[in-house]
Length: 322
Image (cartoon, rainbow, N blue to C red; front, side, top):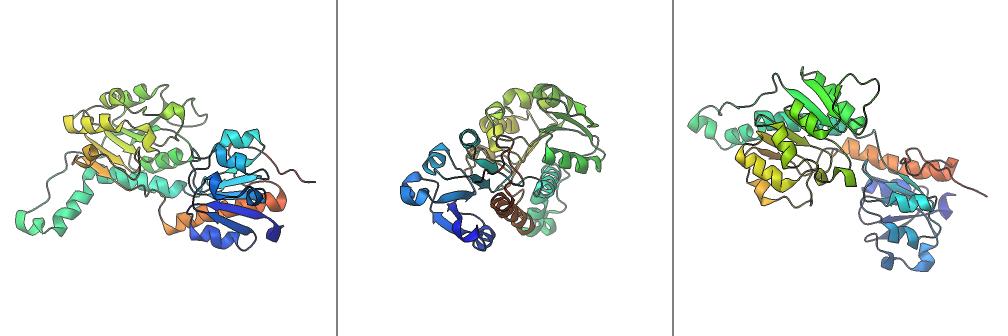
């Protein structure tokens, strides 16, 4: 199996993935997921793919022997899973191994946004404490707040567990209510925003989530409201958010993700009540290594025992042999 199975790696990926793949597979590298970079004769020899980023229908069509696409990340919106499913190709992602890291980051981002801790550290480092005295009191606090989680998947549940430790009342909105969940369910995002004063977005990139957090939702969240986004920048109307922050429609926002990464709108950068991070929610060595291992373990499991460890719902396939 190992020496005869060829795995394509388009673009960059964590070095740990490459190191482990080379222990059992022949690895083929190309600069990006572009059919023109892979001759048809070589494309025909590719059985699997390990990718961090996009892998569209054109690439899938270009690989006639492809059996599995192992994606680095819990979100797989860059992979054309429908095209893969149409050919019986398995697609895998890396759920669970990053839940805690992202949930921890969401809480840290919330605290930084509400209590302005980055600004307080800058006050100290710039010598303003000695020159000007104590850092100004923060107008916001976590005390007495209600949090709404938009997207109660694995990470959303992990965030909720952490919020409980702060004594914060929790509610949520998803397409359908979850059985056995002790949090208040709201059937619409508007209803959730009206009921809470912290809105935490952790939904995937789908057509249904495109810019759903818009001016109307921000108005519903209100002047004491805080928006936290650790899901996808796709979900937020950034122009509406910048205007809401500037005009006092909401009190503050903390964002780890943006619509056109790594480009962040100047209108958001200009807002002193916005805490902005460069998409670092899962960015620890420990968590990224665990994600890398799961990418490779999915490939070894597929070619070794005929089933992936973490297939996405669109491709619940087992390997056909013989």
